[in-house]
Image (cartoon, rainbow, N blue to C red; front, side, top):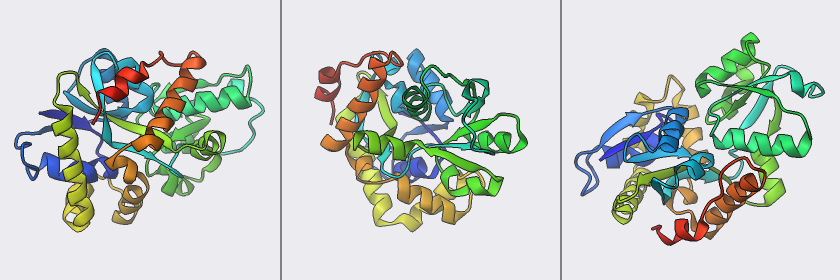
Length: 278
């Protein structure tokens, strides 16, 4: 099996046992560590490995070629993307250039929904760059603002940046649902029941013995401290990682239905999606 996910602590924590031969039936797993913009692009084109971590915002573009698993992803509360700037004046949004981690990321989709609600008729210019490059670019003044994800919520003050808005807080207050960030998808024809069971076994093993997993997490943690890595895991690995459940499914439907109604993503066939899942 070929799988692609990010080197971020939440993904490496969840998949450690699966990719290291500790889960029965998954003895030959080949991993590609890829930025979310890469996997979103592969999914939209129907390319890439048979199993991938993508943004939920990219799911409508991938649904014809991939099935969604109801485990292994990232949903939660208090963990949404942040819009960061050096200053807080929002009066000239039409002149702003904002760096985003992917034009099909949930972060960018949330930003577009928020912008439509808060700044009618105003559209900022957007440039895509790897998420780890965004805060340094804002700090240097290469871009006016940055939309950040992952561990950036713990470190943005180190770059002298200010939080303009927490889009996760906005989403939760507006909808009452958790934030659907990342999803695990598998090419149609994959045994998703077996794969879901393997992911849950891997996650359970990580929860039961986290210290065994941390060397692998830190090997891929892109120079962040172990303290930050553990905070990242605590925030993004939760009950929704084990199973979306009815609350998680409602959150996904709210996000993508609302976005489709605004013409931002293609419409989804929800009955077809949920009826296939483990």
